[in-house]
Image (cartoon, rainbow, N blue to C red; front, side, top):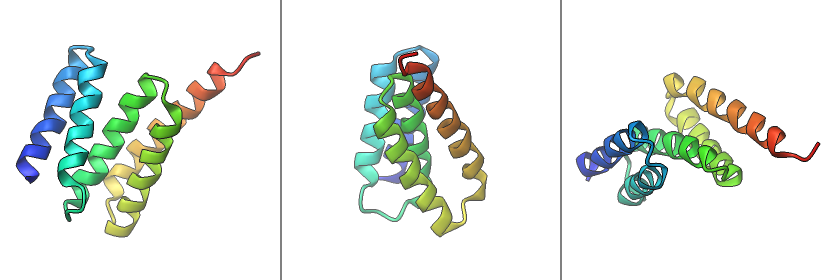
Length: 104
């Protein structure tokens, strides 16, 4: 299951490079679905981070923030310090996008 979920995360990156946001999001969701309830914590955090960034591009800020919070909790519990900077960067971009979307 780990390998199949990782495949879907890799495909999400391929779709990102092709600028196919719908396929990118679908592939990220599939990866999360496959690992749900399993102890693949590193993959669970990475999948949430990448999907959050994709959702931010779609302007689904609420779900993106939810996924970032979940990823942050996973990273904190399992000491995945290398992912914390990416979470912070995406959260900052998300906050900037929310502010820019507000009426003047």
